[in-house]
Length: 383
Image (cartoon, rainbow, N blue to C red):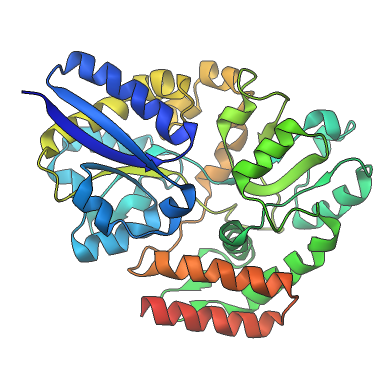
């Protein structure tokens, strides 16, 4: 009898194609198991509760801020109860930065990093007019670059509500360290005020569509047009640095930061989890062992538009050659990435926080009042 495992992922080739490919090859050697993948929007992936999804699907691709809710409501299985300790130890030893630990909550491993990412910089070497080796290293360097570029190209910073929120957290972590976020009271006000002032000051120098676009829209525009030379912070997508995918040469680099920063940017990526309601938990765990193995991650997973979560792929010369050194060129950022809070209610707070910040930046509102409102909202959602 055929066992059907249902999975839910996010709607992008990076989140869908490698799962379909590896599911087919997995089923070829496990003849009685078939996997079916559905998709949801990227916005839903980052903001919508996983409670209903855990009722409908066996495998869930999830964001690490949901781990608190998953633990509180017992939505996901503790993987240490299903997978061998040796396998989990190998995964932890080959974590890209804090990716593995970001899914560890209250002593339980609720997901494993199938995909690793953080906010990095992106640029078009052909539009930097000989300045490729002078990429911004500090936040102040962004101002310098905007003045150096000719009028036909510019700096774009994707600051749609969700991405403004992510960049805001990245800069706060750079400025004040990871302890800037107090789990009881919220964000350290002085750090938040400084970052808001910085973003508001930079806005007039940025591409006019900065407040509209998300990372995927930004990278599509970089690929298809010639008016965006540099992006200081966005979630990296290795597929855009592969010649077979991109119509132009998009490159990725470590992002600019404040002097002396101990953190680089916000950790992203995707974890794969097993629903606590699954009737096929052993079979689902068997697929996890397969798709997260280093050979598959650096091979079939990457070859099908995936952005692996295993360090073997990030350090592979073959993989890096295929994507213009995307992984080796941004690995330092991942190693020093900031992990968002994972307390229950944080996903709800993220959604409202992005809208609040976007309105404040658009209307040039008082940073002091904005921080008061932001922390009040945090305490409402997460206390």
